[in-house]
Length: 406
Ligand code: PLP
Image 1 (cartoon, rainbow, N blue to C red):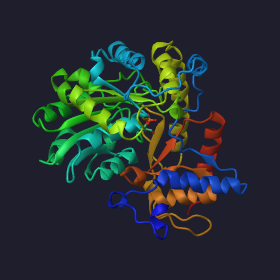
Image 2: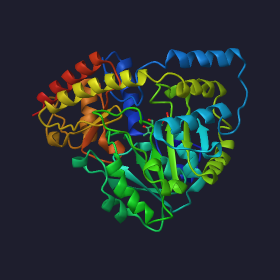
Image 3: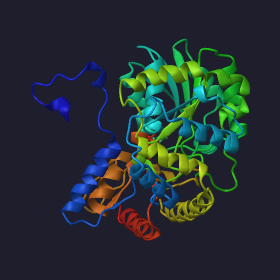
Image 4: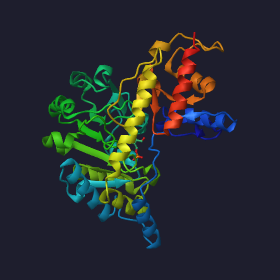
């Protein structure tokens, strides 16, 4: 890392921000693979499907049509219109064009929103476990994350009373990610209602809804988004989404959001001085993703559901591991609390979820991510966005690894 290079003084804003544990595990897994070990990595935060052919074709047409120039700052009119139609069609939400923004991934959308609004000392409430990047993005802006623990018995959804307790005069945002990474938590309409009631009492607190996994929900659960549930709060809700997870387009880097036009304008200022605009080709492809056929989404969802069931069943059959069945996204978040204190045949003791994941990788050839990376231990995250064969083999290895513990 540059922080350790002699002669380089990095900015103080990077002091507590580092390479995530997920990346560290990925790097170690790659090292082991390069050394010839048959490691199976269950860490990917992306669908294993290809980008749909109709979307690829639009990108190729854009290249051949010389659509190779800077676009308007925060999105082409065509893509903003497609986003607008998406919100109307799928979420029953009407937005004006000046309430829509497009960035290089949902990640940049969120970053822009925080850069545009957070001051030193501000607080952002985030239910845990949560995607690790939120904390770092908030930290770069000089603010800090206030975690509120999701209730394991409620599928990691937070209680409204816990939320209210965490609100202070410094709170600027509540960020809810549903379906959630890493737990698969899904906030239903009924889950949101008491939370939104709390927010009504605190007019200074805005709500960022990270809906990036919207299309990946199971068991007939209906996806819900706060702007639809509480129209009276729409003046302070930013609804974030993107094409990465729904359309298997993580590398195309297109995310979008809808919210109050003043916020959207401020976010465009941030974007204008960082990436200027998202890729013209990716935007053309994303118009097709949003406007084109949507029928394959259900088939992909079904495929994820089958893999979820395989993993949940296999994990719950292992003594010392407990795994609730998540209602969304493509992750399981299982407890390894029952393994703490046990030893591997090599004599290594498992003292934490980080130990468990390290030893499973080093001695069991399976890479998973410790809950500590997401702010809630003693758990580990599996991404099941990988082939059924790899999942079966990984579950067999995991089971063997645990059986051999004493
Ligand atoms: N939000 C969550 C919860 C995620 O897990 C991710 C990616 O892993 C993102 C946002 C970022 O998505 P994008 O690829 O659109 O930047």
